[in-house]
Length: 279
Image (cartoon, helix red, strand yellow):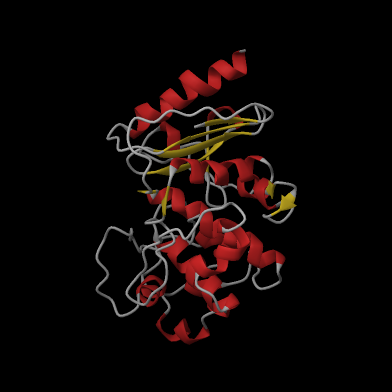
């Protein structure tokens, strides 16, 4: 689906319009929840994680006391903990495992992609607000965008995985992408706090040494990847994408079942956004 400000949306489907697992696109949602909770005075981006879970202090790895919410959302906590939502959870509490895992870098010094940080961030939102991540976002984001009762799979303790396993239709994800393109305003109503969408890309960390492909080397912000040409994107396994170009006032949203993720991303740029830029 292609959205351009001031023009009708254009879309095409190759399969049925069912809700699909957005995979890592879901990571952007806890980042937006963080901005909302910060604006409400419930959280602080640069507060240490253990300030919200002091009971985990005794099991925390050496150095983990310095990990902040910023480190979690930018994946720079330095943790050795690697986990993604398709993996089985055997621990009584995944959060305790995350906190106890040894650090391999000083917090803030090294980017390492993992689902552990977004999951931990979702737990912080629940601790600070009294509502799990999905429940917190229902009245603040999902309902205003008419994302009716989205499924978000949860850990054995009932907390949404946060990093993946959120199910939406293409058009539903496209509305979220459009919201970010419009600086957090939807139908004249501010949904995302003023300035937060800009911070999501401005507060980026370097990923230049990433070895998983050039598309992952432009930087990582607050729950979003920076992309070529000043664009940013939400990026999920098997071709789940929402690419946002603020200069073109355009957003391209794709849900797919593709093994060629990088080729699909190239097509979004070369066949859709680049021609718009050159028109």
